[in-house]
Length: 229
Length: 126
Image (cartoon, rainbow over all chains, first blue to last red; front, side, top):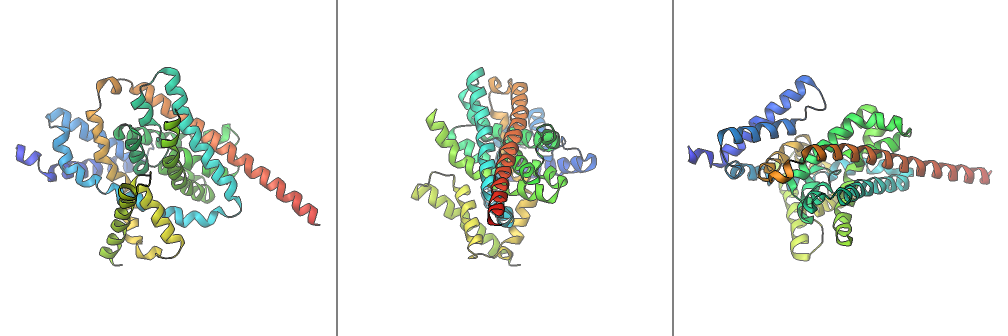
């Protein structure tokens, strides 16, 4: 049995099966809280804990899938490229808004972590939580955080954005469509963008554009900010 | 649709990113350098979207799956950190709301200021 469990096929099978279940559940009930990644994560962690199979055994196969994280990040340039023409006349406010949002996201993490005495590792793991997962996980690793915590924090952030964005925009009287899109994409990456697309075409395009820009900006500034602390 | 050529291009860009990071010493993770490289190649028309669209579409449509294995590493995180999850959940939610509010208000304020300035200029021209 050990030979089976330690074969790469085991981790790959478990990942595929769990993700398929996650996608099916989220499609069936169509609720933002039912995120396929979170469901699959809970299923696999639960399965490994119940059977006593180690994370190392799972990751023999899992690491084959993780290798694809690099091409998955690179192709994020495609949606940004498709939207870049839409910057047009508002390019200055849009870029400035994305920078302000990214700095706010990181500033909140640092300020509150220092105030309530959160551990250094946790603070670094949460720092890139507003950007898209493939970028956030490598930034987390680079600055000394724990990528798995970052990935889950990013997912929670994205779900929050998708659920709360329309209400926050209304409450804060953010009425301009471009501003709504920039806010959502900067704060809650692709998960939030799905909601922005429901709000309208302009919001969707701006949100999509903001994902890549916010990711790049955070990747550049996070290590600099950390070195200043 | 030459799928192997498309995949070769994308992986070559990944490797170029790693070279720039590890050997040349650019202080950004290799895959983020790769992201910038692809954006530059597309914007300068060196690479056409059709030359990579099948592979990029595949990854973009199934992006979340590739993060599943790294997320399972949460099992190996110490109890001292995991026990703080209610606080972390709360912080993630609050920070996201603040970020949306600040990002949106800033953008809206700057758009308003730009429009105001443009209107004045138009008025001056007349």
